[in-house]
Image (cartoon, rainbow, N blue to C red; front, side):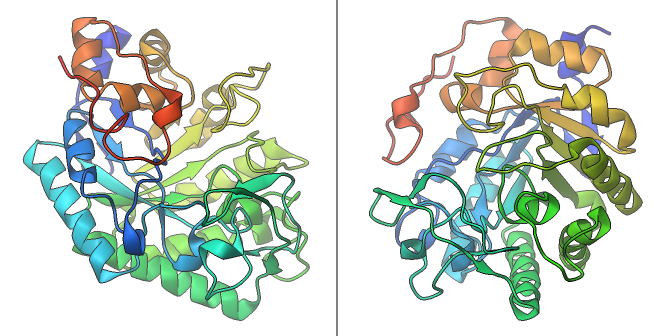
Length: 366
């Protein structure tokens, strides 16, 4: 079969049935309303894109402390859960599948976003380079985070489990654990950010421990064949790095193989920030070529794909599905456009974050 034919064949990611191989990547849009509740327009936004084989929601914080940017939605309150249920219902009514991406940003935050909880928390008290947006939507220098205690880690695991319970209550087809892009679980994995000397630091096995414990607690709620993991080897976004990424991520994947997960979702480091700025490209390893064969389950690849590149990676067997981000922002019917070979709407980067319907629900479909 050609790559295009493969793209429009169904595939099962664990127990999650996809009608095609196009995945809507998780896309932070910063449009939540008071109480970190998804915007009322989110029902329209996600419903418009239900022809994707799978929708992965925007990253959704599991607790107030997990929030890293203004107006990102949570999944820790009854109001948030009720709003997500309405979104899930619309996607299901249109024949789509949708999973919730569970998120804690760790040190990539600012105390103004969670004043009651205080400083951001991280594996180690190391401030990221650069600045971030506070609750006032203005840039602030990163703060030095609090190194997490064993009590903080125990609370985090309870928060992950509670978020999974809420995701199940909302009717999601599964969950994706965000362990990429320099956020909390990635901070524990990589040795630039994890300088701990306890059982969560030092060896790769120790640095992996928290991710394993998160999988263990959420798998009490969703079976493993409805749980995906997102990783970003070689990413530098959010000031992340590791001294031996091949050994680190090979070991992590080997450990993930024991769970029979729904899928592994990996970001290609095509840009210098793997998930950030798309304007600076560097020679980078091809993650799907390096790590796909190591993972024994279904594999989603993401990172700057166009249609031809997506078809090629499917045809070569380097992925089972391809995630598209920016193209899904501006093309709600991306699957139909790919299938018919129709021109795509250009996206407007100025409307990616914040606002209401402009650049969110007003892109035309065929």
